Amino acid sequence: MSQKPEPRGATRQTLSGTTSNKTRLSQPFNFTSYLRDHQSTLLESLMRLVQDPLASIMTVMVIAIALSLPGGLYVGLKNVQSITDQWDNQSVISLYLFADLEDTKALALSHQLSSRSDVLNVMYISKEEGMRYFEQSSGYEQILSALPENPLPIVLQVIPTYDVSVETLSSLEALRTELASAPEVEYAELDAQWLHRLASVLSFGQRFVYALSALLIGAVLLIVGNTIRMAVERRRDEVLVMKLVGATDFYIRRPFLYMGFWFGILGGYWLV
Image (cartoon, rainbow, N blue to C red; front, top):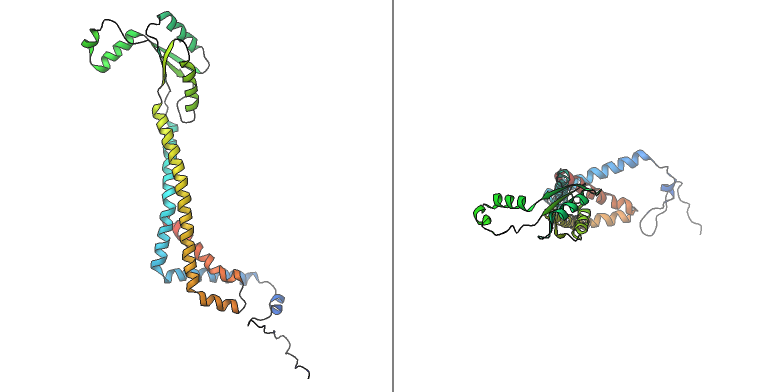
């Protein structure tokens, strides 16, 4: 028995309930309708956020706080670094010579250091000058005057050609070590201990900001992902129906992607 012919232009129904793609594939691509479809999906996803204001506001606030904490810490760290870079501080390396060293040898060492290319100036502080400064700063003039001899050594204050900064700290330390190896020098001190502490604090702060940023970015991704997952669960029946009528995965995924887009935009706007 012959089968009855199908009407012209009709599509064949498949076992899954979806129609054949032959007619749909034969239709030309319409860019205007494509943009209109994206626009309607974008507005629809925004309206869904407005319909659930409490959950949407809480999610947006969590995203804004998570983004503002590492950003604020990073800006503060950069401001501290910029302030320290603008400080015009000359580094001073104090060379404490042996107490029994003669003045002529100390002066010869001073002239020798002044001729170095990495030394800007050398200040010679004799024992008498050091004692007068110590008396004025300590206020024990009578007690110090009763000493049988001056116990202070000759001090050479070496000023390098480069200023003190976090970048030049290693070079200054290397110069201090080299000058301390001189046979006339008993002890050499770099007047940049504060810079050591500052460099350590800035280095720790930078690592802390990076670690906190990674943790908070991961938290934001988990929060947005969990919010979208709950939205998918609420629309589970709608998604199943759309799959039955032949909707593609990209078409089903599109409103949820726009939902994440709106969360990012609103969280960034709240942050600003």
